[in-house]
Amino acid sequence: QTRRFPDLFQTFYQGITAFRLVRLEDDKSREWADVGKNALSKYETWVNYSDWNWENKMLLLEAESHACIGELEIAKSKFQASIGSAQKHRFVHEEGLASELFGMFYDENGNKEEAMQQYSHARSCYQKWGAFALADRLCRSTASKVSI
Image (tube, rainbow, N blue to C red; front, side):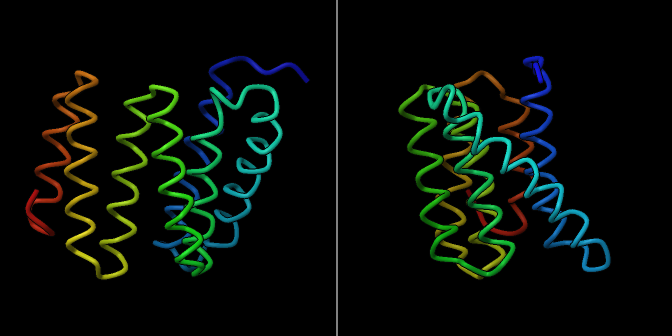
C-alpha cells in the first residue's frame, strides 16, 4: 500500500497522542494503547526504508510505549536515544518534542530537576527552530510545575 507523506506524520502524532492518553484516561486506555501500538508497528517497518527520517520518531514512540507499561528505565533510554537521533539527523523540532515529552515523563515520575533540564532543552530547540510561540507556551505551561 502506497503511503502519502502526510500520512506518515499523522500516524506518528496519533501514536504519540494515544500513548499520552493511555496515562491520562483509565477507562479508554486499552483502545488508546492499541492505536499507539499500531503506530509503533508501522514505524518499525518504515524505519527499514529510511532510518534517517523515521528512527527518532520510532524511538520516541517506543519511549512512550514503555512509559505506559511502567518500564521506566527502558523508557528513559529510548527518550535519550530519540533525542540523540533527532540531533544526529538535524531534526531540531523533533529534538524539542522528544525533550518536552521526556520532561513530562520525568515530571510525572517525580523528578522535577531532570524535568526542568529537559523542558529547558526543548525550549532551546524550539527557539533554534524559530518556533518562538511554542517555546513561550512551554515556558508558561511549565512555570507552575518547575522553573525553566
